[in-house]
Amino acid sequence: MSELISFQRETDLGVDEFHDLLVRSTLGDRRPLSDPNRLQGMLENADILVSARTQNQRLVGIARSITDYSFCTYLSDLAVDAEYQKQGIGKELIRQTRLASGLDVRLILLSAPQAVDYYPHIGFEKHDSCWTISPEAK
Image 1 (cartoon, one colour):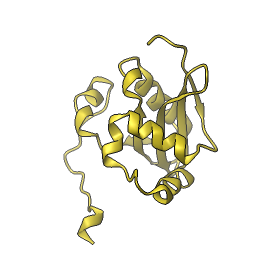
Image 2 (cartoon, helix red, strand yellow; image 1 turned 90 degrees about the horizontal axis):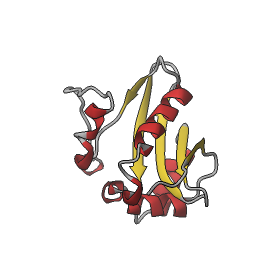
Image 3 (cartoon, helix red, strand yellow; image 1 turned 180 degrees about the horizontal axis):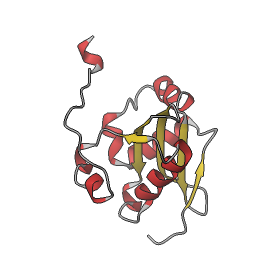
Image 4 (tube, helix red, strand yellow; image 1 turned 90 degrees about the vertical axis):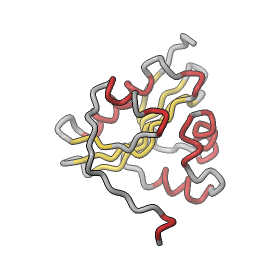
């Protein structure tokens, strides 16, 4: 696909549109797609939402982040429609996120299994001391 893609900050992204993009990307398998309230909370509580849209305004990419705008930004969702991958959309979403949060702020993310080889290619460094507690651990 060689459509013109525009990138912009989103302020009112709808749950249905977000859900649809997650399904069309590889990220949907690891997000609470069956819980629209959680998806709504994910959108409402994000500090930075950068989208990629086609000329007809179809959402084909999203970067959803939480930040303090001073020290760190956690890029919690980077999703690109599978039909639009390998066109630089993810890289531009990351660039736009960095511009929004500040270039002096560290960008942090947890990679989807399918993307572990992608991030080093665009400048990310692997960090071996990340720890998580899953919701199942209660």
